[in-house]
Image (cartoon, rainbow over all chains, first blue to last red):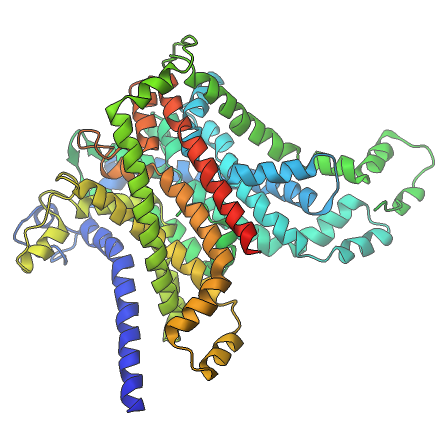
Length: 280
Length: 309
């Protein structure tokens, strides 16, 4: 009896896990299958759409030779890396200051950063777009590099405040008693200990920048300086015609970098999730 | 705390400019203020200033490239009587309400399942988070292809069991249902994995004690898991509600607010009016409508978090 009961419970669990996997992964399977289908299979009403009979590289070749996909990839990488580095720099300093140092206005600033963290980009994108064009940063990667930190710095700072607080202050005090300046205590004692925190914040920031859509859509119209999300969704659709093979190939290639980075750092992601989640 | 700058006493007695700087940097208030400058400048220039600039724009009839003049609250009063805007308000509340409830429920089920022991557990957890991690517009374009009016894979499957599928992004309520489905798909991993992370911090002792007392699975869930998960639940609900309410990408890629403006949300309507039709003043007032509503959501969540403590 208990044997039977255990068996049915296992079956239920297996069924549950399988359902979850099918639901979450099916769209990705669909993306992959589509990107390898020759057009006669893609637009055939008779063929079984779930499988590909004779896979071809055509859509990928088209993407690399007939579109600006390589430029979009490069633009996305530049913007994501530079914006992430700048935000890390600003958020590390601010996070350390708010966690450790007493200075006038610290409390107000802490609150302001938390509130900013809760402001969705869609609230301010119109005046921001106007501003960016007024200061001649429209239609350039520079504009994105300056603006992406507005959503990266608040959550990075918020996460890093918590991280710095978890490092015992005694270590710094010892260093300072031994003659280190405050700056040196920060740079050579606390900062190295905060590296895992910086790493997870950095990965999060990179992913968010790579995925950003609205600002890039609003600021950039020149096809050569588009990032992947806007390049793929705007340049592979001509009028009402969707180039589905190329679209799915582009979507697949654009998703792979974040998926790979993420698969190496799943645990960091999960650890920072509830504290630093910014979309849902 | 005033640390004595011992290091300084070993320096030359003449207080050169470098030494004075060093002395200043030893002061908490100086170093602290200095450290927040980069973050503060960025946020002042690109959050605080645009906020007030947006308030001003919403009170003008500015168009892109044309400064426009002050019109008072006319944008807001015009909107209040505009049928597309009224539809937008209703859409946004429906979209947010329905999607968040489902994301919460499915997320909880996912967490409860993944919290059990089974082979390849780490791999499955990693896979479950994928919809949330990849660029939203790229996964959404795959959904758009799955909703295609002629080649929809869903309709192909439905046809095999003898059901005529709808035109997902065209018929009646189906566009809205499609949007909500995709939003749930994208958001539930975040709920699930966050809840799971929360569940794993709950001590097993509670469950053992409850089992000794003969508590059923539901009783354990209701009286142990749920109350102890409360802080995580509140944070996740807060973030998800805000971001679902202010969603743009998903709607833009799937329907662009169509057909016939029937699926607009605040953000997509603001984009369409403010940038696509160049009425930036009117557009700014549409997105500002979100502000009081979001403030109430944030306030309620923080208030109820405090109640729990």
